[in-house]
Image (tube, rainbow, N blue to C red; front, side, top):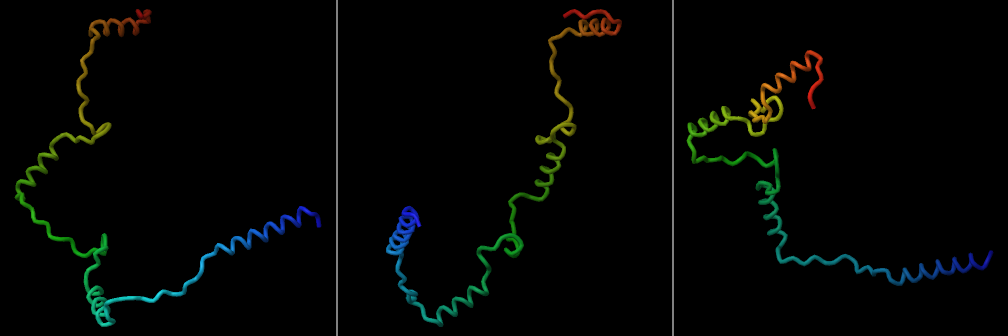
Length: 126
């Protein structure tokens, strides 16, 4: 063996010893300290097992609470009808309705003259 291999083996062994010196010590299992008796804990467990889950969501949450509205049924229906007949603010493309009119600065007669000239093969003025 060469000297460099021996020195590297000694260095690894020293690092292992140094790492073991810094290891944590095991204190064992800690003893439980509780002010409640076994009977008290058992009765609390029975109450918790029969009560509703406060962390349940979705289908596990149980029936939804009853919602009491302060608005009459007729007023809600009238608002729904008005919303259904109004323009859709979220519509895009073909469902957006009629496009708004855009005012043009080009004379209509000039556009017609250019179209006639293009149809006859005349050169267009640029």
